[in-house]
Length: 86
Image (cartoon, rainbow, N blue to C red; front, side, top):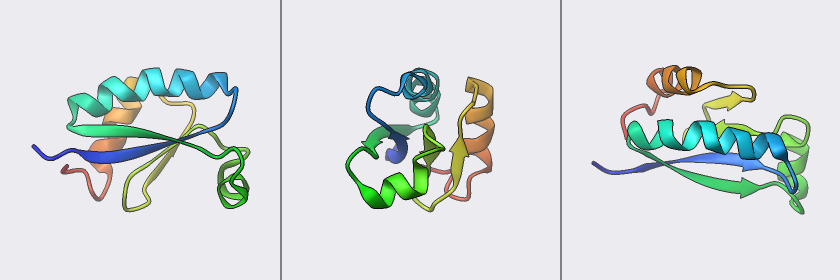
């Protein structure tokens, strides 16, 4: 199975981002996705887009899920995402 990469937008010193990774990573792996963490720190464009919303999960086609989320919510979101077949 090919892995498709989800992006987890995070920030420096963001404790919610650490929680989000702990929730999302195992669910993503079970569904055949990999998870890449992208820090918005120091990137003006990403900070403008995600600064007050992090942590945010994003599929390659732009489908987003904002915090807070549970393992079940991530699972349902991945199934509903337009690119849900990795």
